[in-house]
Length: 417
Image (tube, rainbow, N blue to C red; front, side):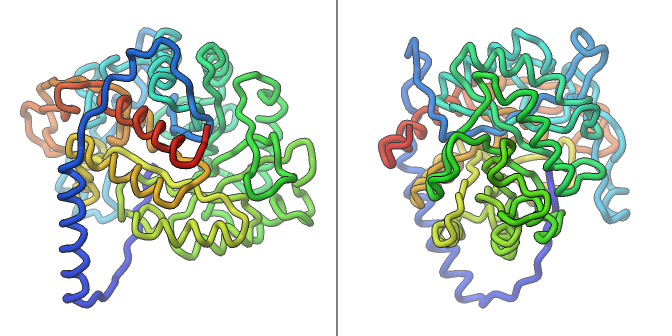
């Protein structure tokens, strides 16, 4: 899930120097305060917080469960400029199980998202970290992303396993060929009709709108690809095919990437917006310095602002030309800074990017502390060599632990349970 947004800005050199120097001082002092919290797995029956959502992906496969590898063998993606692409072995695929399309390597290996044991392990980890809701990357029945297979087949087993661990599932509707506002309306109806009565199906209240209670919450990725006037037909109170006030009503959350999207989301009738990207500054919405203003806009218009926090970002094992957007984890300091920035605006909900988006290095799922592999295309180039996967240091569970600590801080700060 990635989009490149290029802006040309003229910034006064003196102002930029002052801002950068101030941030460096703040970040240095913040790093000094970092301490790894106690291991939350000592708790035998931890509670979860249904106002904390983690984006979850079910597109992984292996020969044992799926007949072949899916996503772990991700191809090296081309740059939009041919001259840049020609510098790399774009189009070539990774060779699992040891060589995968990620810069970290999961403790569970090149797993299948259909493996019941993997799902059970994930639910246990999620519960222990305090996360209450998984925002499931979802495509309509018979549709899938370019590297995987139809995702709807995973929903039933996920709901069942989630229910066993007191976890809830909501839906993160992905872009797909032919997606329109009307087709998304059909998707919401399908989701409600097929899964709406399951005990693990997530429903919540809109804190700013008393008439919106006990409704599903639906994230729409890349919602800006559809015009606000088209969304208004589906999400506006007076739209000709509006879901408002019907049995298929929902709390629908759009993606804010650029500043102008705030007005588009308001015009389109959305109930709120989220920021998704874990690379701070990659987009207007993911820039932590903008969150206070975005929250003020949301409050003014009775919208939900759901900031997305992440542990870092690196995708150079699928986009070898994209090192400029890498955000190093710094032993958890980056993740803690994201959480701290989110809690400063006192949001009603926080989303986490991600539990297991391994391609972009945003996962909090446990990773091996050390692993190397001989590869044919080192760093995306046409050269053999030994690739060393990144790690979380000596603690594979570091980001589950940190998540638990910050979920508890979220509850203390706002009373969000």
